[in-house]
Length: 259
Image (cartoon, rainbow, N blue to C red; front, top):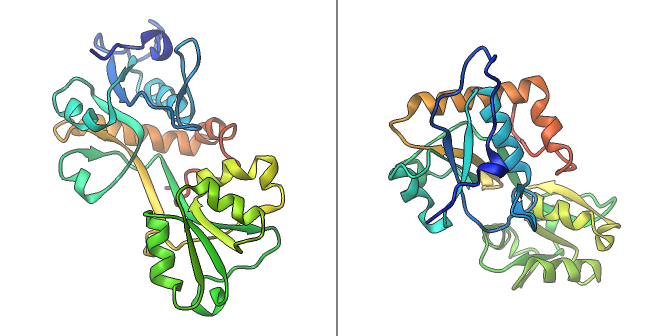
Protein backbone atom coordinates (compact mmCIF):
# COMPACT_ATOMS: atom_id res chain seq x y z
CA UNK A 1 0.00 0.00 0.00
CA UNK A 2 1.21 3.51 -0.80
CA UNK A 3 1.21 5.68 2.25
CA UNK A 4 0.02 9.27 2.49
CA UNK A 5 2.82 11.64 3.41
CA UNK A 6 0.61 14.11 5.17
CA UNK A 7 3.36 15.47 7.40
CA UNK A 8 5.57 16.23 4.42
CA UNK A 9 3.05 17.83 2.14
CA UNK A 10 -0.31 18.69 3.69
CA UNK A 11 -1.17 22.34 3.37
CA UNK A 12 -3.39 23.56 6.20
CA UNK A 13 -5.58 26.42 5.05
CA UNK A 14 -6.81 29.06 7.46
CA UNK A 15 -10.45 28.81 8.49
CA UNK A 16 -10.63 32.52 7.82
CA UNK A 17 -9.66 32.07 4.19
CA UNK A 18 -12.07 33.47 1.65
CA UNK A 19 -12.51 30.05 0.06
CA UNK A 20 -12.40 27.03 2.36
CA UNK A 21 -10.55 23.96 1.15
CA UNK A 22 -12.69 20.92 0.50
CA UNK A 23 -12.87 18.20 3.13
CA UNK A 24 -11.12 15.67 0.89
CA UNK A 25 -7.50 16.55 0.14
CA UNK A 26 -6.19 16.26 -3.39
CA UNK A 27 -3.88 13.28 -3.70
CA UNK A 28 -0.74 14.09 -5.66
CA UNK A 29 1.05 11.06 -7.08
CA UNK A 30 4.84 10.86 -7.14
CA UNK A 31 7.23 7.98 -7.76
CA UNK A 32 9.47 7.24 -4.76
CA UNK A 33 12.71 7.52 -6.75
CA UNK A 34 14.90 10.56 -6.14
CA UNK A 35 15.24 12.92 -9.12
CA UNK A 36 17.11 15.98 -7.87
CA UNK A 37 16.69 18.90 -8.06
CA UNK A 38 13.03 18.13 -8.80
CA UNK A 39 12.40 15.76 -5.93
CA UNK A 40 14.27 13.76 -3.33
CA UNK A 41 13.61 12.43 0.16
CA UNK A 42 15.52 13.56 3.22
CA UNK A 43 16.74 11.07 5.84
CA UNK A 44 13.69 11.84 7.97
CA UNK A 45 11.33 10.93 5.12
CA UNK A 46 10.49 14.51 4.16
CA UNK A 47 10.25 15.21 0.44
CA UNK A 48 12.17 18.21 -0.92
CA UNK A 49 12.71 19.74 -4.34
CA UNK A 50 11.32 21.97 -7.05
CA UNK A 51 8.30 19.76 -7.80
CA UNK A 52 7.43 19.68 -4.11
CA UNK A 53 7.60 23.46 -3.72
CA UNK A 54 5.64 24.10 -6.92
CA UNK A 55 3.01 21.62 -5.76
CA UNK A 56 2.63 23.41 -2.45
CA UNK A 57 2.32 26.78 -4.19
CA UNK A 58 -0.32 25.45 -6.59
CA UNK A 59 -2.36 23.93 -3.77
CA UNK A 60 -2.19 27.21 -1.86
CA UNK A 61 -3.26 29.14 -4.95
CA UNK A 62 -6.33 26.96 -5.53
CA UNK A 63 -7.02 26.90 -1.76
CA UNK A 64 -6.94 23.14 -1.57
CA UNK A 65 -5.41 20.75 0.96
CA UNK A 66 -3.08 18.27 -0.72
CA UNK A 67 -1.26 15.10 0.29
CA UNK A 68 1.58 13.33 -1.47
CA UNK A 69 1.05 9.68 -2.38
CA UNK A 70 4.00 7.51 -3.39
CA UNK A 71 3.24 5.39 -6.47
CA UNK A 72 5.67 3.35 -8.57
CA UNK A 73 6.40 5.15 -11.85
CA UNK A 74 5.24 2.28 -14.04
CA UNK A 75 1.86 2.29 -12.31
CA UNK A 76 1.34 5.99 -11.81
CA UNK A 77 -1.03 6.64 -14.76
CA UNK A 78 -3.14 3.55 -13.91
CA UNK A 79 -3.32 4.87 -10.32
CA UNK A 80 -4.63 8.18 -11.65
CA UNK A 81 -7.23 6.44 -13.78
CA UNK A 82 -8.28 4.28 -10.82
CA UNK A 83 -8.76 7.43 -8.69
CA UNK A 84 -6.11 6.38 -6.20
CA UNK A 85 -4.53 9.77 -6.91
CA UNK A 86 -5.93 12.97 -8.42
CA UNK A 87 -2.88 14.47 -10.10
CA UNK A 88 0.61 13.44 -11.20
CA UNK A 89 3.17 16.12 -10.40
CA UNK A 90 6.37 14.21 -11.09
CA UNK A 91 8.29 15.82 -13.97
CA UNK A 92 6.14 13.95 -16.48
CA UNK A 93 6.88 14.90 -20.08
CA UNK A 94 3.84 15.85 -22.14
CA UNK A 95 3.64 13.46 -25.08
CA UNK A 96 1.00 12.72 -27.72
CA UNK A 97 0.75 9.15 -26.49
CA UNK A 98 0.12 10.12 -22.86
CA UNK A 99 -2.31 12.85 -23.92
CA UNK A 100 -4.57 10.19 -25.40
CA UNK A 101 -5.34 8.83 -21.92
CA UNK A 102 -4.83 11.79 -19.55
CA UNK A 103 -5.11 15.56 -19.76
CA UNK A 104 -2.19 17.84 -18.99
CA UNK A 105 -2.09 21.31 -17.54
CA UNK A 106 -0.05 23.95 -19.29
CA UNK A 107 3.66 23.14 -18.90
CA UNK A 108 5.18 24.04 -15.55
CA UNK A 109 8.74 23.73 -16.84
CA UNK A 110 10.64 22.92 -20.00
CA UNK A 111 14.05 21.35 -20.43
CA UNK A 112 16.28 21.87 -23.44
CA UNK A 113 18.84 19.73 -25.19
CA UNK A 114 21.96 21.88 -24.90
CA UNK A 115 25.57 21.70 -26.04
CA UNK A 116 28.26 22.27 -23.41
CA UNK A 117 31.87 23.16 -24.10
CA UNK A 118 34.73 25.42 -23.07
CA UNK A 119 33.77 28.95 -22.00
CA UNK A 120 34.07 31.48 -24.80
CA UNK A 121 33.41 28.95 -27.55
CA UNK A 122 31.08 30.04 -30.33
CA UNK A 123 28.96 27.17 -31.60
CA UNK A 124 26.86 27.30 -34.75
CA UNK A 125 24.52 24.33 -35.17
CA UNK A 126 24.95 23.94 -38.91
CA UNK A 127 26.98 21.42 -40.93
CA UNK A 128 29.51 24.17 -41.61
CA UNK A 129 29.66 25.24 -37.95
CA UNK A 130 30.07 21.67 -36.65
CA UNK A 131 32.53 20.51 -39.32
CA UNK A 132 35.51 18.74 -37.75
CA UNK A 133 34.07 18.81 -34.24
CA UNK A 134 34.25 15.83 -31.89
CA UNK A 135 30.88 15.51 -30.17
CA UNK A 136 30.31 13.44 -27.04
CA UNK A 137 26.84 12.10 -26.27
CA UNK A 138 25.22 9.37 -24.17
CA UNK A 139 24.30 6.30 -26.20
CA UNK A 140 20.66 5.41 -26.98
CA UNK A 141 19.30 8.88 -26.21
CA UNK A 142 17.35 11.42 -28.22
CA UNK A 143 20.50 13.53 -28.04
CA UNK A 144 22.50 10.80 -29.78
CA UNK A 145 19.81 10.47 -32.44
CA UNK A 146 19.94 14.21 -33.08
CA UNK A 147 23.72 14.55 -33.51
CA UNK A 148 23.98 11.37 -35.59
CA UNK A 149 21.20 12.51 -37.93
CA UNK A 150 22.45 16.09 -38.25
CA UNK A 151 26.23 15.97 -38.05
CA UNK A 152 27.61 12.43 -38.54
CA UNK A 153 28.82 13.32 -42.05
CA UNK A 154 30.80 16.37 -40.91
CA UNK A 155 31.74 15.62 -37.29
CA UNK A 156 32.98 12.70 -35.21
CA UNK A 157 30.26 11.47 -32.84
CA UNK A 158 31.50 9.57 -29.79
CA UNK A 159 28.94 7.72 -27.70
CA UNK A 160 29.26 6.90 -24.01
CA UNK A 161 27.45 4.58 -21.63
CA UNK A 162 26.81 7.46 -19.22
CA UNK A 163 26.72 11.24 -19.39
CA UNK A 164 29.40 11.37 -16.68
CA UNK A 165 31.81 9.59 -19.02
CA UNK A 166 31.08 12.05 -21.82
CA UNK A 167 31.60 14.98 -19.44
CA UNK A 168 34.90 13.52 -18.24
CA UNK A 169 36.21 13.32 -21.82
CA UNK A 170 35.15 16.93 -22.38
CA UNK A 171 37.10 18.05 -19.33
CA UNK A 172 40.08 16.02 -20.54
CA UNK A 173 39.91 17.64 -23.99
CA UNK A 174 39.11 14.43 -25.84
CA UNK A 175 35.86 15.85 -27.23
CA UNK A 176 35.04 19.42 -28.22
CA UNK A 177 31.46 19.54 -26.96
CA UNK A 178 28.84 17.31 -25.36
CA UNK A 179 25.08 17.33 -25.78
CA UNK A 180 22.67 16.64 -22.89
CA UNK A 181 19.66 17.93 -21.00
CA UNK A 182 20.30 21.43 -19.64
CA UNK A 183 19.26 20.45 -16.10
CA UNK A 184 21.89 17.71 -15.98
CA UNK A 185 24.48 20.06 -17.47
CA UNK A 186 23.63 22.79 -14.98
CA UNK A 187 24.41 20.41 -12.11
CA UNK A 188 27.76 19.51 -13.68
CA UNK A 189 28.68 23.17 -14.28
CA UNK A 190 28.27 23.79 -10.54
CA UNK A 191 30.89 21.14 -9.77
CA UNK A 192 34.66 21.85 -9.68
CA UNK A 193 35.14 19.96 -12.96
CA UNK A 194 32.69 22.28 -14.70
CA UNK A 195 34.51 25.50 -13.83
CA UNK A 196 35.92 26.11 -17.30
CA UNK A 197 32.80 25.09 -19.19
CA UNK A 198 29.52 26.71 -20.20
CA UNK A 199 26.28 25.98 -22.04
CA UNK A 200 26.87 27.06 -25.62
CA UNK A 201 23.76 26.47 -27.75
CA UNK A 202 20.29 24.94 -27.46
CA UNK A 203 18.96 22.44 -29.98
CA UNK A 204 16.03 24.15 -31.74
CA UNK A 205 12.58 23.15 -30.51
CA UNK A 206 11.57 22.12 -34.02
CA UNK A 207 14.39 19.54 -33.96
CA UNK A 208 13.08 18.00 -30.75
CA UNK A 209 15.23 20.10 -28.45
CA UNK A 210 12.47 21.05 -26.01
CA UNK A 211 10.60 18.74 -23.63
CA UNK A 212 7.69 20.17 -21.66
CA UNK A 213 6.67 18.81 -18.27
CA UNK A 214 3.03 19.07 -17.23
CA UNK A 215 0.72 17.94 -14.44
CA UNK A 216 -1.41 14.96 -15.49
CA UNK A 217 -5.09 14.92 -14.49
CA UNK A 218 -7.97 12.61 -15.42
CA UNK A 219 -9.75 13.61 -18.61
CA UNK A 220 -13.09 13.92 -16.84
CA UNK A 221 -11.68 16.40 -14.30
CA UNK A 222 -11.65 19.36 -16.70
CA UNK A 223 -12.38 21.91 -13.97
CA UNK A 224 -9.38 20.78 -11.94
CA UNK A 225 -7.11 20.91 -14.99
CA UNK A 226 -8.18 24.48 -15.69
CA UNK A 227 -7.80 25.52 -12.02
CA UNK A 228 -4.27 24.15 -11.85
CA UNK A 229 -3.32 25.70 -15.21
CA UNK A 230 -4.64 29.05 -13.97
CA UNK A 231 -2.62 28.66 -10.78
CA UNK A 232 0.57 28.05 -12.79
CA UNK A 233 -0.13 31.18 -14.87
CA UNK A 234 -0.62 33.19 -11.67
CA UNK A 235 2.65 31.94 -10.15
CA UNK A 236 4.47 32.91 -13.35
CA UNK A 237 2.95 36.39 -13.36
CA UNK A 238 3.31 37.29 -9.69
CA UNK A 239 6.96 36.27 -9.37
CA UNK A 240 6.35 33.33 -7.04
CA UNK A 241 7.44 30.82 -9.70
CA UNK A 242 10.83 32.52 -10.10
CA UNK A 243 11.26 32.76 -6.32
CA UNK A 244 10.68 29.01 -6.02
CA UNK A 245 12.95 28.15 -8.95
CA UNK A 246 15.91 30.35 -7.99
CA UNK A 247 17.49 28.03 -5.37
CA UNK A 248 17.37 25.09 -7.77
CA UNK A 249 18.37 26.49 -11.17
CA UNK A 250 20.83 29.05 -12.55
CA UNK A 251 18.72 29.50 -15.70
CA UNK A 252 15.04 29.94 -16.53
CA UNK A 253 13.65 26.44 -16.01
CA UNK A 254 10.30 27.52 -17.44
CA UNK A 255 12.00 27.94 -20.78
CA UNK A 256 8.85 28.95 -22.67
CA UNK A 257 7.15 32.21 -23.65
CA UNK A 258 5.16 33.51 -20.69
CA UNK A 259 1.51 34.31 -21.28
